[in-house]
Amino acid sequence: MARRDWGRDEQLLALRLYCLLPFGQLHQKNKEVITVAEAIGRTPSAVAMKACNFASLDSAITQNGLGNSSRADSVLWESFMNDSEAVIGDAEELFQKLVVTKVVDADELSPIIPQGPTESVREVRVRRVQQFFRNCVLIGYKNQCAISGLDIPNLLIASHIIPWSENEARRADPTNGVVLNALYDAAFDKGFMTFDDDFRVVLSRRIIESVKTKELASILFDIEGKPMTMPSRFLPDITAIRYHQNNIFIDDV
Image (tube, helix red, strand yellow):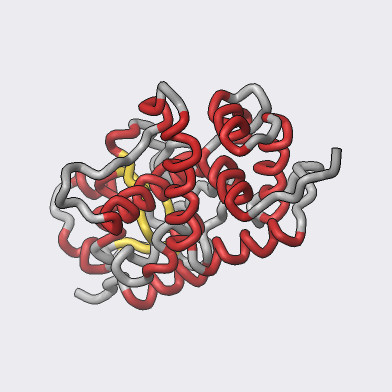
């Protein structure tokens, strides 16, 4: 039988698997891998291998032997890095169309469908991108706050380093994300905290001056200079960190 080249739609679904499944689950026996394989007419082993191929393009991965990416894989990866919102928006639409709608237990695959007749296709796409970003970033940081190590999902935020509203192309970019607990996320979002070029915590003088109690001081001041715990994949982008330093961080009193 002649070898069948991977089409872009198939590559998108494989990329999505790479982003959303921990490494220990990227194998041919994983239920979601099997479901995707059945939807596109590939073997589970081929789909798992294709997903793992993207690891060789991820700068966070230093382990050898994780797969051999093709030229087409590299092109798709570059597109993902340049305009994650567009690529992931397409990937999520394909997943809903080719995978979710073809399985009986679709609820287990976390489908997002319109909530009533007034919700537009664009709104649905945006919510799918938001969900992808959160899931992808949380998986990279092993569902733990990058500063405190807190591992309670309901208290964790997948924070955009460059805010969602500031750069549409990077809305789904996991290198533009960091997991923070709710308090640190609020401080980061409002510019009271940032990271330096070595990914260590920097606190704003404004928040330092405003802290009046020992309890709050112990929560905040003890993290000054603490290094971020790095994710297992999709390292935070230094250009995004510098954007936050220069445009979001407030260092006056």
